[in-house]
Image 1 (tube, rainbow, N blue to C red):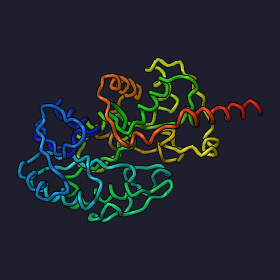
Image 2 (cartoon, rainbow, N blue to C red):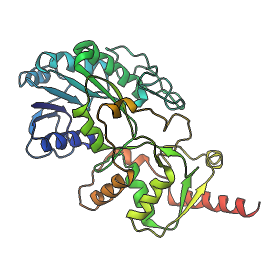
Image 3 (cartoon, one colour):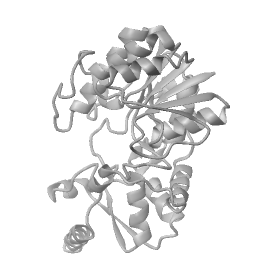
Image 4 (cartoon, rainbow, N blue to C red):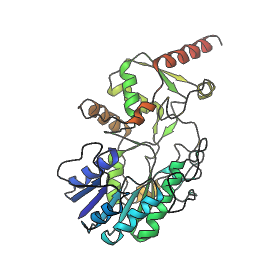
Length: 337
């Protein structure tokens, strides 16, 4: 089986390549080659997906049984890529996002929830950024989905809509931030209710499902059996931390102006943020590992010298000074009641 991965060096792209190699598939990656190291044993074709000549040359390297696209964000670019590869590929798997839904993150979601309306030839600035949603990112991904479906047809297209993806080689740094915070010790500001259900999924489980999934549209999340408390407990356990978790009410944190999702990674109060139904994917082969295993494997990866630098990681995390100030005020408030 011949597989083409658009991307292949960062996080999910790398996990897709490694899953394909483990299955002894013939793997080609197409990327600019400006970031990250690719896996060994893979044919690399360098090029730019926005360059028509590069795409024509890539199509000439086919045919492929399967194309896996992790790099589509701009609809008109996705449309050009799909049109270039359609004669040379049997099936197309597009990695989208739950951000394509109109109701994200305020409403519970199913695979059939209403999707944002975006033309298949839209540019990078289509849509708008709302608070808490939608986003130009979500509009763009919705338009990319439409572009690929228009070109390959529903029978040859698989759309995967993951929620939060964690695991080894995570460049955004959400899980690594919490692991480093517990490693540092002291009092740790933990947001909201420790019993809140969360649904992050391991990058390797997404990759495995990308090969197993039939044609169709699938939300790809964990079942929601983990909680924020069990997640942070796993962070404390694997780091052998003596840190003291201090759980602080969400309303207080909001009043203090703490930024959800960034200052305290993975903390989000909206009802739909962790209420995404992925039962269709599970019925079609999605298997998710325990979140603790993801935490442990990420911690081990962080100590193997393979850390990746990415600008988005700098956006995350409350400063030690601000954390200490919020905790002091919270503890004083509680003691004076």
